[in-house]
Length: 108
Image 1: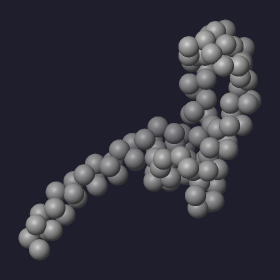
Image 2: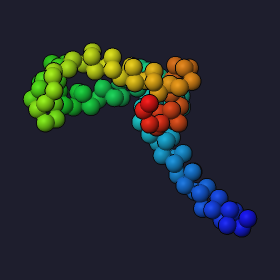
Image 3: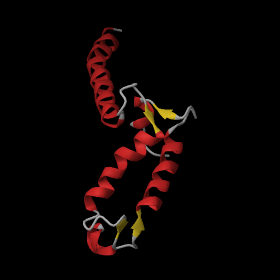
């Protein structure tokens, strides 16, 4: 019993740290500060990566802009459509937004 209590006492700070990390990650996406991430916020935040590697800013990632010069060109619209599909998979409760736990859950 004592070992169980000691184990639980050691685990509590890790749980709190994990929760703090999830909350900090959510705040990066949460542009309006309501404590949850809408589909629009998710797509907006995740699209920043596309914008960074779209060197000529034409809304298309050409083969030479993609890591390793491989693959096929991808448009911003196609990229964002994929992000919307990802959002719907992460929104496990189907309430139209992501909480910290959903946002940090592994994809399924």
